[in-house]
Image (cartoon, rainbow, N blue to C red; front, side, top):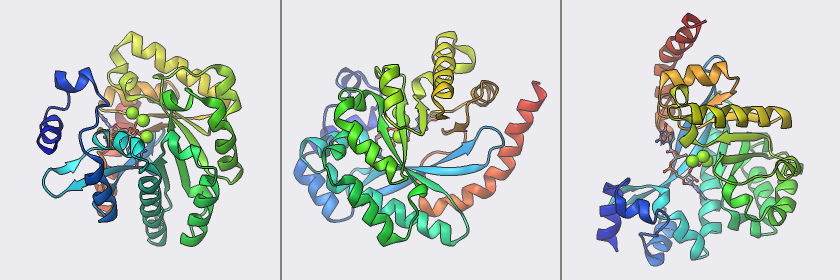
Length: 291
Ligand code: C2E
Ligand code: MG
Ligand code: MG
Ligand code: MG
């Protein structure tokens, strides 16, 4: 299994993987041991304002620091965790680490909101909102500093089941984002009824949006819809300066992607902030020239 996993990690876009992209590669025992011995680490990717490049927050993305295979990406083990009933433990670990990190950034004078990805299985635990509330209380972090991201295709596969828990999270002042938007089947009614704060357009529509008319149609329609519903808009997977400019002109609020930064260990963030100041000014300037 390990050899296979290693191989598929090397050929991420290989035909084997794309034929069955959700195939688990690691076994349950290995993952359980990783969770117990603290081998899962939180990486952080900046979210910046498309208006002026200001750092607004970060999304935490979990990685498995595997003793033999190196850094393993979540696509290789999240589904295993879900199927083995380990996702609650995983989410609690990721949440705790993320909130502790936000607390220490805050103590250093950097007020950031952290976004944490959650699984639909987490929303099946009726005490999920209360557990988050006690964690926030224990760590001294305000609810407004936390955003939870749920994937559109998952949440909309059973919107009624999640409506109650999501509403209770919102009542506790925790923000909600609908992730990978455009890949699921939300109806207007569902989008209206579930109290989301943010709509995050899937990277598959964002990459190359400035010169792809199909992607442009999806992105513009998504931005329009979000605006009507009063949701903040985020574009994920921003890789090119032209896409940044396009999104800004189109009125998207926030950008995230490799153009800005890859996900990084927490201790690299302050160094990134310094180099970003110059690059941010350059990006803003490109926009101005085209006006
Ligand atoms: P996501 O939440 O949609 O996260 C965005 C993914 O796109 C991340 O992959 C990120 O590293 C990658 N990405 C960011 N910017 C760019 C870009 O400019 N270009 C390209 N090509 N990719 C970019 P990652 O870290 O491998 O995570 C994959 C998915 O795993 C996430 O998708 C999320 O659904 C899930 N995931 C990550 N961490 C957790 C977690 O703690 N819990 C749960 N339940 N799921 C998680
Ligand atoms: Mg996400
Ligand atoms: Mg996403
Ligand atoms: Mg995505």
